[in-house]
Image (tube, rainbow, N blue to C red; front, side, top):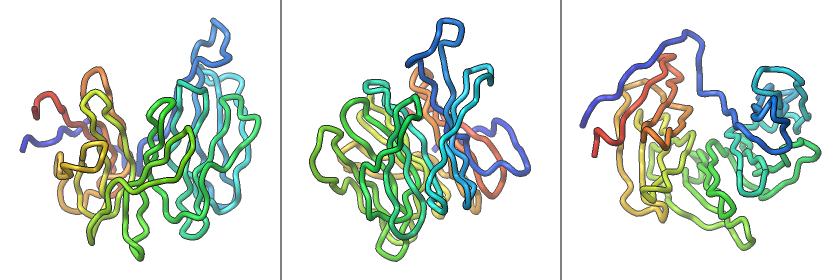
Length: 232
């Protein structure tokens, strides 16, 4: 297996910032906007600003909800994120204007990563080690959530990304020190790249054009990458 490449190192970096870019409602001078989550336990918030940092605004989120994994659905112009709290975790949604927040699914636990198939479905990871970690999905058109992949003992998933061109998803596993992957239906699961003992991979993004995975490591503070083209 080809090794991953170290891109950079910062002492206190825990995970990639979950930022989504959008052109919805933007003026030509500021064709993109940035969105990010503040996970402050007592006062979490969802923020927005123009790409140059101007006109920042924010909406308060539920105290103690531990929001994670912000994702944008470009087909509908909605933002989605999940909550990492152990009891009563939810998948939430808001328009890009941040006018309101709406629960999509409730009564969950320890949600960590979330990705959107535009206009079609949500995928997310849960790291409840008591009931068993898993990857699940929900159709955006309606209908119940369904299990995609039950993860074995010792699994502790974090961020998740979709590779629709290859019909796969990838996720960071904190305890197994690896970037894992599987087909979108959960079949063919396995290790994509080992990140090294004790590295604690956490945040994960996918460059669709370069077919390259980037992730952060909680323990080492490194930002690293892996080329899927070279692996193939």
